[in-house]
Image 1 (tube, rainbow, N blue to C red):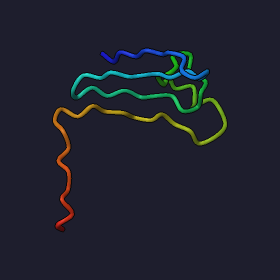
Image 2: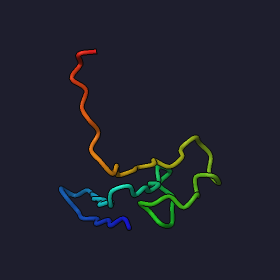
Image 3: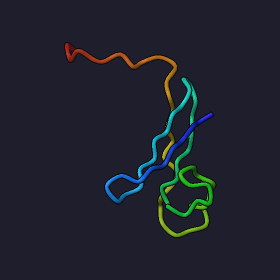
Image 4: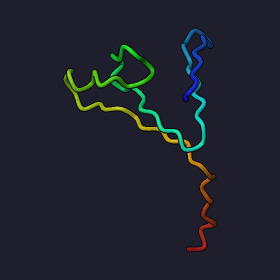
Length: 69
């Protein structure tokens, strides 16, 4: 289960998310979710095109490309 901690830093709120490998969460981008920072679907009832940001913790690291095409 996602763990999140919100703290004040330099006068601004900062939220840190910790996910288990393979875990997926939807984060609010409309800034109106009652479950902020998680999406609760409120964006569907407000004007605009903002939907959630989907974040997934991969089970294994992504291999970096060497650029040798």
